[in-house]
Amino acid sequence: MKKDNKKVIYWLFTGCILIFIMVIVGGITRLTDSGLSISNYKLITGTIPPLNSTEWQEAFELYKQYPEYQKLHSHFTIDNFKSIYFWEWLHRLIGRVIGLVFITPFLYFLVTKQLTKKTIKKCLVLLALGGFQGFLGWYMVKSGLVDRPDVSHYRLAAHLITAFLTFAATLWVALDLLYPNKKSINIKFRNLIIFSYFILIIQIIYGAFVAGLKAGLLHNHWPLMNEGKFIHHTVYTLNPFYKNLIENPSGIQFIHRILAYLVVISIAFIWFKARKLTLSSLQKKGIYVLLILVGFQFLLGVLTLIFAVPLWLGIAHQIGAFFLLSAMTFTLHRFSK
Image (cartoon, rainbow, N blue to C red):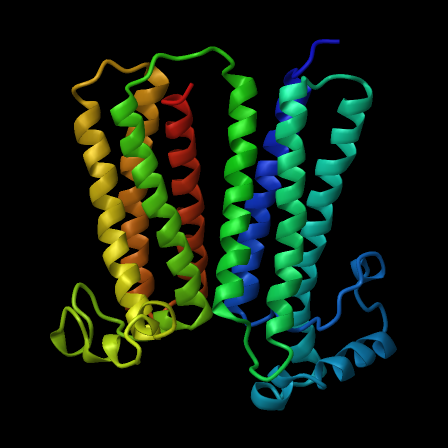
């Protein structure tokens, strides 16, 4: 049987789709404040939600022991609890499904010798990333069960960016198999794409910081911040100064705004430089899609800010980031050997 065949490619793309769905559900879980509704972790038995009133009451009583209920949700009825429990349960269920979808076919392809040694090594990296992502999810939730009724924005950012990078790595491996032929590339132009990719990754991390500290609920004006200022005075109130860059909600929102401009400028510059190059059809399509998506994502970001992060816009903005990273990964792959 041919190695690295279409079935392997379909398997990898299925993984990409599942990670995409998980990121969407994770965003809903975050925006609905559902992430701390399940305060324990049971790998097998946790797959099945409470099935009767007694089990629901036991889950609710466990939830009552932790800061989120005691400090924020003491008014909750069991029906309120069920609504937030659902999203966290679904998020964890999809995580389990992703694990099975990755591991089971991988073992099958391994036993039936349908993978090359190179692909096996890449898939082992993907499995490690997936396992690490699961650990980060547990580590993130743990931070919200001690004193503060919220998770650490650092751990949230680590959890989110690992999901994005796991998706990007899976997509890259699939593209390696889909387009096995080598390409002639322009090194300087490829480095420009890598630089833009790096800026986008930093921007996604700061997007997680904004979500974790609820910084999107501040300064809901654009292009200026409150009081008609480009830099509001609350941006630099913490000492030492560097804490404004990583812990001050106003400072983090300001950086997220600035990085948005940099992402747009860098991708526009890629498009501008690409006009002078002889490109393949796929390379051209990748760059044009990048240009369209970054404009759409910038607009979504502005609307999300102005309307103070309604659920649908917050999710749309996160999906936009996912599509933009996908397009950036595809474009970089088309300019790499």
